[in-house]
Length: 191
Picture 1 (tube, rainbow, N blue to C red):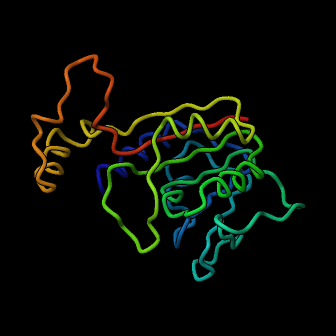
Picture 2 (picture 1 turned 90 degrees about the vertical axis):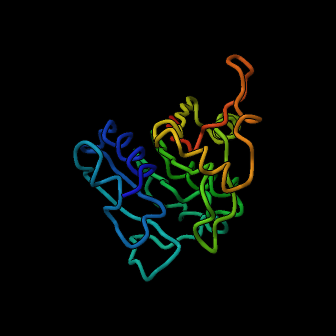
Picture 3 (picture 1 turned 30 degrees about the vertical axis):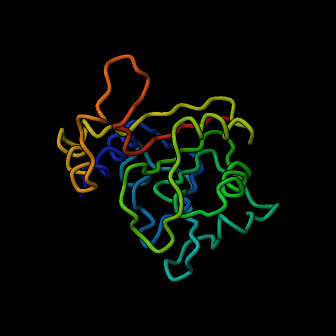
């Protein structure tokens, strides 16, 4: 398992879903991929949603185009882990997720990460989530950065070397306001 995935798992270990209704959006072929395996407790209802019917999700949905049925239940907890970067229409996707979130939406996305799929479209910053999520009814948005330093001190140096960039030009003095080591984000958005 990658070090980046380990960061997600460590974050999930802090989340208690005991007796909650849970929806895991973008669960792929493993309905217990992250949330039900690594979180504390077991949800009283645990459903999956995915674009691909071959994965046999409980709900087949394309976050870029579809909405959940109007009469569908809202879920107390919604997970959208390592999925949003595959959406070419992120505002529609966020609106769709907000529609079924009763209490809290958990999102994880990569930032500095190789393109890893034919449908890998976008990267988001923590500031983007803080700006966008309140527009869809989330009153509290917490952003945790997945740091390259957590992945090992040579992660970004290797990246810059491969790209032909000089690390000495990129490192900034303390207090200059730039962060160059966010490799992804962990978002907790509460209604």
